[in-house]
Image (cartoon, rainbow, N blue to C red; front, side, top):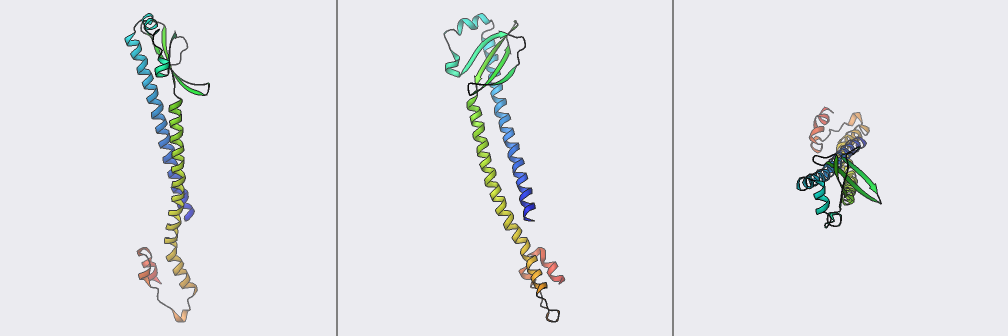
Length: 185
């Protein structure tokens, strides 16, 4: 009984933790993608012609301030959202179509901080899972002992029973679930 309780509760704990970690990483990744797409849309809206963008962005380097690289490329074979790993950093690359042109604006953002946050969340969830597993073992042990104790009491009475000297079983010391069984003997 002890092992069944531990297995079932541990499986539930692991399933819940996997679901929560999946949803958190999905939320953080989607939020980062949406934010970068909104920034690309704003740039295209404020600078409808790429010549304006090149002229006005010459004095301003967004990579230093926002850690975002901006470039304009041909739209051929451009994947709208792409994740890259280079120089020990994670990057999110978003291609947004430029108005009235066969060009796309490319925003590349370093998302290593977001990845570090996700790794820390996973570590915290692993610690919570381990603590939960230890709690499950403790709780299952206590529950198993409480359930088995009345059965051991009745078994000992049967083992020590001398049919000529039958002693009544004290049902008041049994849990309510076992009173009917005790009364039967």
